[in-house]
Image (tube, rainbow, N blue to C red; front, side, top):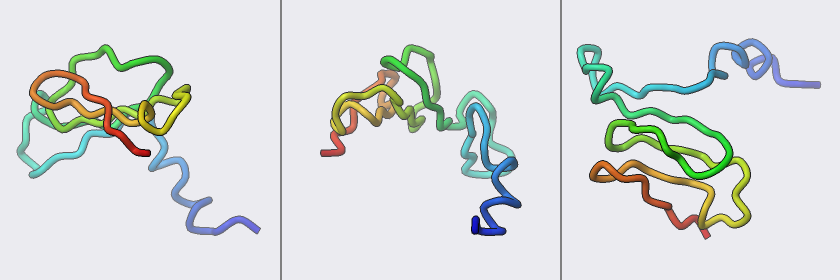
Amino acid sequence: MASKFAYRYRKPVSSVGVGVRGSATEADTSTPTITSGTGDPTSTEPNGSLYMKTDAAAASAALWMMIGGSWVEIDGS
């Protein structure tokens, strides 16, 4: 049987992208995002943003982070 917690909260926590604010008044342009997709990330996002590559062939290419204005692979192996 599936967890009632997971069933109840599945829709609210599933979304195309999530922004993580440091404060309630942080501007959208500086709010890091968490997104996923196929291929390498190409969008311009604020520093600290995370991208999960769903078609990665290795752990070293599955997670990316925006650092200093550029996407950098985070080696997860």
